[in-house]
Image 1 (cartoon, rainbow, N blue to C red):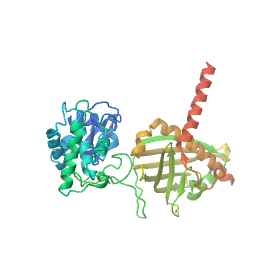
Image 2: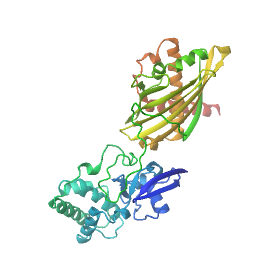
Image 3: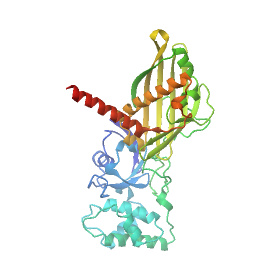
Image 4: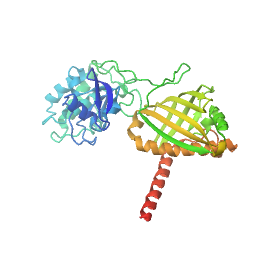
Length: 398
């Protein structure tokens, strides 16, 4: 179960939900807000449309846990909203509803069009409503009602809001309420503020409790003291990590940098800072970091603990790792735990290889420091090939 805190129709709500619970199911079953209807449950019909941080979103394909910190407005929360009130009157006047099942989602999508379209162009209205399906009316009355409200408001001198209040590109709601406009819904409260992890000189990298922790290890053919010295050289250490680069001059206790990640068509630049702790008495250390990607509105916190253990009578070193992390935002929805673990294992192996080469004086993969992105897709393909190889060995062994 995951504990979430969000604002629903101007009311603070805290609840424990299963990670797989969709926002629509949470609203209907836990909060009894049944005005949000469920139709196709594939994000196609639009019946479940609501406002997430003031922007229309499909609640049937949005996980409730991913909305932690967001502001949610359902059709029930728009009772006193000026635009929705005018739309309801126009829908009634133009005979724009019959069974009414699609109407809540239709009103919310129509509200967005009234808010941002400069004129009541029929094609623009039809395109804007194309994500909301109605099985009864044929759309003629609906389009007429929306166009009438747009015309009336523009004649009254009410100007359109460019972008409908959207302040950034990216998935709806991935900003956790921190950057969305609050001027569009009079009854909406100030959003709960989530840490945005913007990098500045005063940024404090605080301790945290990781949501996920896993352990790994690797061995390099150099004495522990030499490896420990290498771990203390932040610039050389960053050069061993694919996709990592420093954005400022590091100190032994602190570093600021960037990790570039590419997953298929999705690319992210996690910019942040790390706090470095080292204990030369037992050759151990700890790195605590935090960062965010503005494009995907994803943020992460991570902790790496390492212990250097001598092997082969001190000629080699076993590096024991404990890695903990917390991920928020769009990338958290596709980064499943098992996938992260497998990718991290391959990343650790690549880091170990770069470390070995750097200790030998050859440099990481012979490339310039920080020159290559962390290509998660390439790592994933390598992981899948390894899985296929093991499966084939298992079948042939039988």
